[in-house]
Image (cartoon, rainbow, N blue to C red; front, side, top):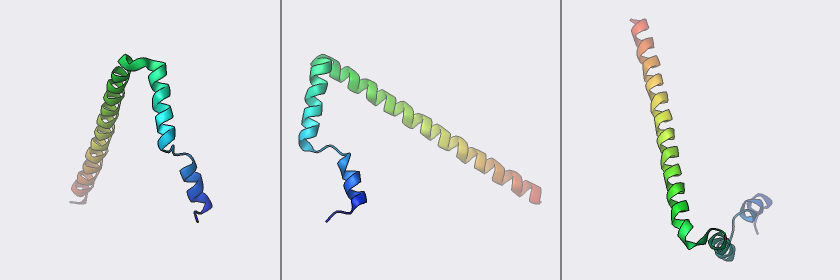
Length: 76
């Protein structure tokens, strides 16, 4: 039997038929011609977000390296 926390987690995830209904609603709202445009826009947004995250990680790594190298120089 599922615990109450597992039940709450699974309650928010759509199942198979729910995905079919969501896809049909999207198709009806946007039409078949607009869906590829929306998918391209979504993909571009995801790529930009990943690039921004990678840039932030690189800046943090560079800053940590600078701090480490500055503390090594002050120890000498």
